[in-house]
Length: 136
Image 1 (cartoon, rainbow, N blue to C red):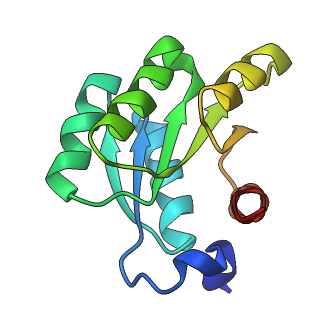
Image 2 (cartoon, rainbow, N blue to C red; image 1 turned 90 degrees about the vertical axis):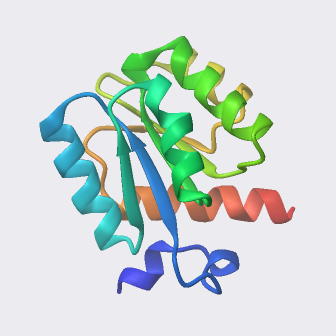
């Protein structure tokens, strides 16, 4: 079911919000569809610079999904969101997974580093694993 993609600790929230930061219109559409199927209300930002403004407009943010192609901007977006009081789970999507890059994103506070395309089952597994680690 759709709810199975949502970690238990987040199920009490009626309106789960996800911010997809992706410049490619086709990937925006694919990512938006996958996130909606997973039960999220989706906001889209085409650039890292737009992401902070979009989050502020929404006022709440449960999940950040960002293109690894943004490189250092992806780390900066998460840092700026946290500085503004947003603490979403954060997922990086990579076209060509890279172990070193993965380690850098995870060290910067990202929840998961996934290869494209965004799929509900892999997203679910990554979020559940991260929520288990957070609860200790």
